[in-house]
Image 1 (cartoon, rainbow, N blue to C red):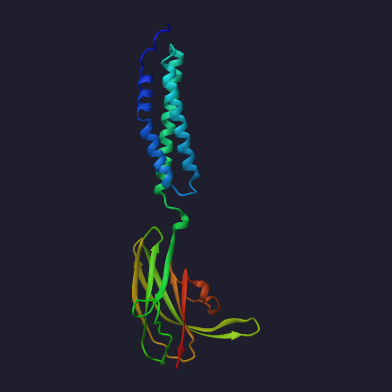
Image 2 (image 1 turned 135 degrees about the vertical axis):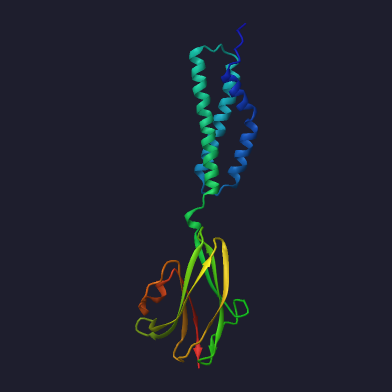
Length: 236
């Protein structure tokens, strides 16, 4: 009859690991289920940890059938430390993947509403010199508070039949103002403008995250801002 193995510190440690094994694997499976589809690295770590824990469970049972000597005991200690390190690394990696925002999540919403707060009833036809109001909306999803700058321009354009494109003839600055939007918040504020020149056929809205350039060539107006919008007009 083979002698019984002595219950050393290693066996007690591995026994503790196997006692909590179902809870650990269940938690890891739940975390893996809520991870995005692209987080294959985190799921791979969890699978690895689960396999190692199953190995640890089997190894603990096996050691009960053998007589450990000093060499085996040292190997067991190293193995237990490796298994614990793998488990901690898997849990840490999973938490990091869940909590760390992805670069693709950073963006800013920039939109216009009519004076009643709806995406309708925009002031597009009116008499020159009469005040007109729209609502400018800015939604900050840049993972930080941002001080945005908005610039508006009264634009005259013409259609080039040669290139079948609309060409900006002139862009007269109307206003420049700044608004600070906290992270993950949206600010909507009324904006009133007057168009004095009946030849103006649209108003351009440019949004900047950094300091706007002092002089923007008309041909580059629509590419100058971080975001841009326009409202086509018929001024009488």
